[in-house]
Image (cartoon, rainbow, N blue to C red; front, side, top):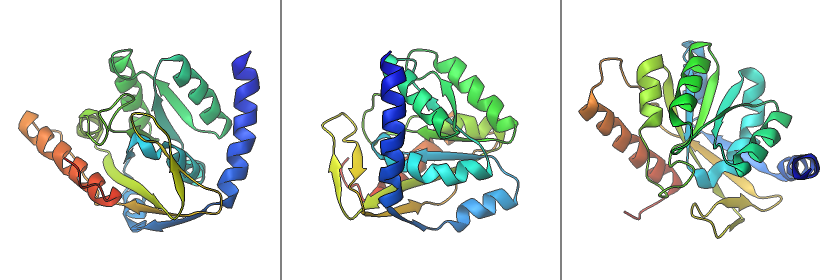
Length: 212
C-alpha cells in the first residue's frame, strides 16, 4: 500500500524538482570518448550524491540503459520502484545481503553493453571510503570507471550517515567527471587496491573533500 502511494507522489515531485535545476557538466568528453570506443561505463559516485546522480542520469539512460545497484531492504525496494518509473534498470543486492548475486547481475548487464551506476561508498558507508566492487567489475568486464561528483550553489544536507545532499530548486549544479580508470584482466590484489585508492582520491578531489 505504501509503495502504491509513495512512489507516484515522489515521482512527480522529483520531476518538478529536476526541471528547476540548472545542471552543467565538466569534462563530459570523457563519457563521449568511452561511447566512441564502445566501452561499457561504470558511473562511480558518492552515496550522498544519489539525488542529483539520478536526475542527471535520466538523459544518459535514454542513450544507453543504466542499471543501478540497490539494497535488498524495504527502502531499496521503494527506490527500485521509483527508478523504474524513470526507465532505469535496477539490480538488487548490496552489503551482506545478496552482494554476490548483485555483482553477477551487474557483470551480465555490462557484458550486454548496458551501463551501470554504483555508489562506491556502499549503502551503509563509511562515508567517502571506496569499496572495491567497481574495480572488480571493471576488471572482469573491460568497462571503464567514470568517477563523478556534484557541487551546488544552494543545498540542504540530510542528517544521514552519507550527509545526503539535495540541491534546492533553481540551484546551479556542477557535475564534475573525473579521469577514467580501467582495471586490466590481469590486475592482481595489489593492483586492485592501487586503483581503488586512485578512485577514492579522484572522487574526493572532485567533491572537494579534505578529511581523512
